[in-house]
Length: 351
Image (cartoon, rainbow, N blue to C red; front, side, top):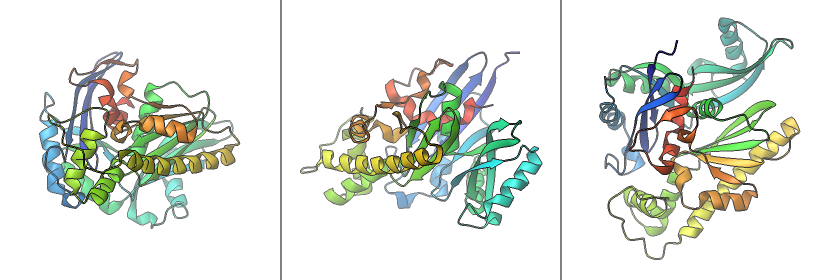
């Protein structure tokens, strides 16, 4: 009954690629956690250098550390061209549900429904009222083809491909108790931040904004007249909660870290407030009572404190590896390193 099953999750981010090997038994046992920072490892000097070969090689290097080899993986798809839509539909069989979703897509997305791949997750079913709440993830067919080709070049078979926001949602639902009041979860990545608003009685809200860790990198690059690579090193070693390199470079003279981070904070605050107002109008609920930050970008120094000041609600870091459902974590993972793995963990904790 409690036979263990190893599941591999692969989160292909813009700056960092993360992997996780998890065994499911009575509790969750994490056998391996690994990540490759494409800039710290000098595989990239600037975003324009990103190509499929770099990603393929990084994945190969990362997965070779997992004992027993890897054939099947659950992966996440992160793109500015991906969408999440929410639908209320009648209770239907799976094939009928897929047809109903496709029929409704034309009015919900800015591109043709024939040019997208989609999958869905049923959040809630009310048979009495004959309705079900569904999250639908959509990606352009051309980008999905490219994603699958990257896996194929590594001789990997996708067990599941998810949109990163859905993976984070699955991680929260699997590892955290349902919130008693309205809360927001911000997954801060390199290029974008996903905003989720959750309430125990209502459908969740999903949104994404083009604000992330690279927002600060580009500010440093522009104001200090340096390369993207040097700006990224400055950010990681001077603006994060901990050092990830053996030597810390000197801070750029005349650079105002406080102003740069405040600019990022104010932009995030505006987006969260807009989402909050929308959710209040939609469901008639009280405003957000608490904010949880996760993702690598959440490790920016004082980001939680500054957002608490501007949003005027408690803001905490959410490290899913601290969940009581997880029995063991590799010894190489310390402190809030777990924030990097929220998306990858969401891929493997679900059924």
